[in-house]
Image (cartoon, rainbow, N blue to C red):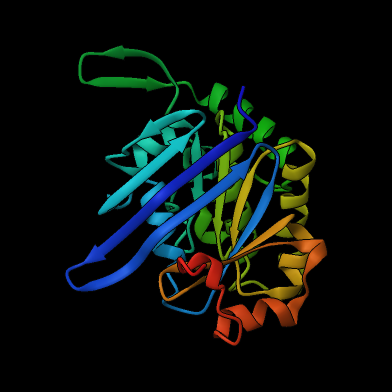
Length: 256
């Protein structure tokens, strides 16, 4: 089994004349947590959209778990083992916790023609197991998402990644709209995933959070990867210098 769980080679995305992502070479090892940083419009979200099947690259390769993929949709990426927590969360407000975790992947007891009888007990048990795995604490699983706090909603979205056999978790600004206590809860979940050996890509603008949680920092600027930094070999000022362009990352621009 290869040590590398995800690799992109020359990943590029153009929107007409706009070069949103250019020649992105990226690797993620099993069990590794990597932060993707950069200013707004730097190419971070574009990169994630390519590797999760939201969009198709203009060119380049995506090798996931040793197999080259061209994901046609987020469902295909999810079936391959990539679970993503987007900023929008994609939760159904009027459904309870188990129904949200299994939305689109419901467990069925049996089918009667076009009708199905859901196995609610199995989904509830699997939900409880996922909450234990991630360290998420939800007092009442029957509560609808609408009646939960922002932190609880975020935790439900994260627990959904653990309810299935995910090989990679991607989190896009998971604490951007949360308070201090809710942020701490989400960060504890990320640490639990690390202890379990789950590889993770974290998109974040929070420098303190990044240095607390990840092994490596990859910086995007103007659609290119300009830095690939080991956490223990850099600091916040160095990262900011790459984000702003004070340091150019010439080795990633094809310079000698």
